[in-house]
Length: 90
Image: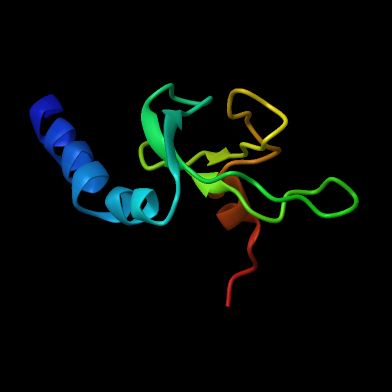
């Protein structure tokens, strides 16, 4: 199963969503959650310091913030799975 997962990751990064993100200005950096290389956009923040933009890791779905003020991406307050679990049923 590891070979299939590696092929899927390679395809996402080089031809899928990852390539689109890199083409739009994302940087290839290490995810602070799973330590895999993933495209990450620089984050924007509002006047209160809350993130307005962030990236989601292609491998673990963790939210990643990366700003000009830090040299490495840092983990935000929740993961994408946490946020989806909080949404009310429609």
